[in-house]
Image 1: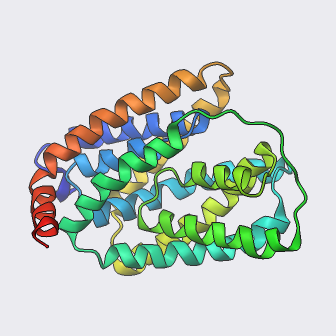
Image 2 (image 1 turned 90 degrees about the vertical axis):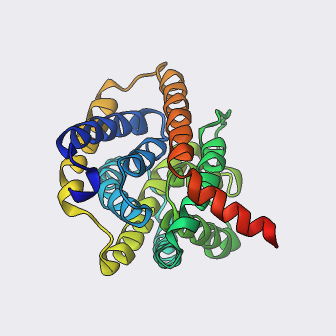
Image 3 (image 1 turned 180 degrees about the horizontal axis):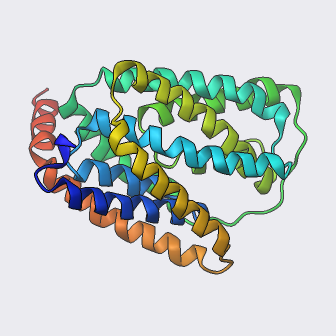
Length: 269
C-alpha cells in the first residue's frame, strides 16, 4: 500500500467505492473503465502499475458477463473463435509496447487518449437490427483484423474496449446488436487475459490492492445487472461523463509537469 500514502486506509475505502460504482454503471450503460482507471492514477499509483492492476481487476467482471452471454447463447462462435486469438495477441503486444513507454510520455498519452476514447465510446447512438451470418471474407479477414486492432488498444490502454468492439461488429460487420454485445464480451475477455499476461510477466500488478477492488467491482456489476434499469441507462451514462470530466481535470492538474515537459520537447522540433 506504499503508493497510497500515509492515509492509505481511507484511499483504499474510496477506491473500493469507486470500483463499486464502476462495476454498477458498466453493467447498465458501459463506461466503467473511464472511472476505474483514472481513480487508480489519482490515488498516486504509477501508470504502468495502474494499468496492470486495473486489467487484473476487470477481467473477473468481464468473465462473469461473458459466461452470462454464453449461457444465453448470444455468442457467434464463428466470429469469436478466431477473434479470441487475434485480440489476445494484439492485447499482449499492446501491453508490451506500453510497458516500454517512458512514464512521463505515458502520462501525456493517457491525457490524450482518455478524452478521445470517452468521446467515441460514451456518445449515445441509435441502433437497428442486424445480421447473424457472414461471408468468408468477413469471418476470416475483416473480423480478425478488427479484433487485432481493438485488442492492441485494450493492451495499450483499455477503457472503452467493449464499446469499441460492439460498435465495430455493428458498424463494420452489420451484426445484430445483442449478438455483437455477447461476442464482444468474450473477445474482450480474451484481450484482457492477453494483456494481463504481459503485465503479470513484467511484475506490474498490485495484487494486495487488486483483490478487494475485484470484490467491489463484481458486487457493483451484480447490483447493476439486478436492477436491470430500462430507462436509467441514459442517466447513468450522464453520470459517467460527469465523473469522468472531474477526474480528467484532476489528472491534468496532477500530471501537468509531465504534460508541459513532453509538449515542450515535441514543439522544439
